[in-house]
Each structure stands twice: as C-alpha cells, then as structure tokens.
Image (cartoon, rainbow, N blue to C red):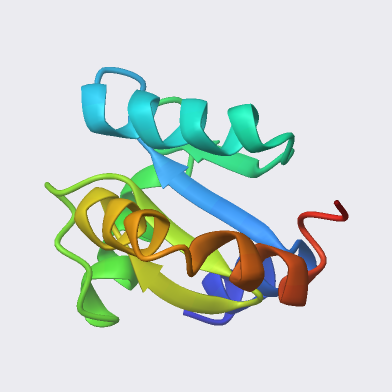
Length: 103
C-alpha cells in the first residue's frame, strides 16, 4: 500500500491500466487529447502489477474495472467517473489544480 501511495503522489495524473482494456485506451486517449501527459502503469506488463491490483482493491477500486485514475494523488475513479466529470466540465479544472494541465 505504501508503494501505491508513492506512485500516485509522485505525478499529478496517474493511470493504472491494462493493455487489453478498451476503456483504458479510451480514457488515455481523452487525456492525451487534452494535451496531458499522464503517468501510466500497465498492470499486465509490470513485475508488481498483481500487487498493485490488490492494493487498488483495498482502496475500493474493482481491479476488473480498469482504468484506475488518480488526480493530484487522490483516487478519482474509473472510466465512468472520468467521463462524467468531463461531461460536467469538471475534469479540466481538476487537472489544472493538480498541475497536470497548464492551459
């Protein structure tokens, strides 16, 4: 859990993803379209991916529902929450406040 906290607080936008997940791809594309450069951890490609999945589940994140998005060190949610924030026009201000978006 301590290593997860370190990972999510080192950068303003962190995404935990699976390379085969279409929703993860969609959310990553959305952030890239904003001009944001998220830190992305592909859990199916890193050595401690399983350990991180378990830590995410203890935070209330369902590991089968990728991606898991952290903004400013806080768990925001998955694809549904990110799209909802985007549609409410709340996502960009969150990214600006976290220092992930400068424009």
